[in-house]
Structure formats: structure tokens, C-alpha cells
Length: 116
Image (cartoon, rainbow, N blue to C red):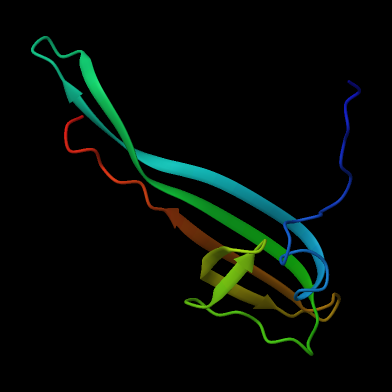
């Protein structure tokens, strides 16, 4: 199968073009915390991944007819994923259009097993 490449910032559904203006860049990262238990000789005998989190960031040429998000607001990605806005920044200069940049997080609930 031939490779397919994407040019430009497309973003995710509901964060894409038009939500807050012209999308300039979009990124998504996933991370988690790790718990380990060592055996009698110090080797890792068990591992558990928890606090899985997805963080997105987006920058727009801001449409001033829209309301910019603030920390604590919710942003829906796709049909069901609700992210919490963590940071939001409006930047105005004399030489460019006003820009909006924000980051948002969504934690995935993963139960910690009773016997790992």
C-alpha cells in the first residue's frame, strides 16, 4: 500500500478549522504514570500503568466573534471525548492577527487491579 502524507494542520473533529478561527497548529500527546514492584533481588516483578492522559494543544488565528475558552472549560473532541482546558492564551500584536492558543487534558479511567 502506498504511503499517504498530510500537509498542513487538520486537527481533530471539533478542534479543526472554524471552531475558534483558522487552525494554525494542532498536537496530541499521550502519557501515563507507572508503578512497579521489585522482587527479593530487585528485579521488576510487576508493573502497572495508571493515570493515562491525553493532552491536546491548538493554535488559531482567532475569530473575534467567538468566545475564547478559559481554564476549566470543556472542549469536545469527536462525538464524545470531553477535554478540560488547562491553559488559554490570546496574543495580540501590531503586525499579526490575534492568536488563540490553548491546551486541554482528558484522563482515561483505568482501575488499579487488586492483585498485580
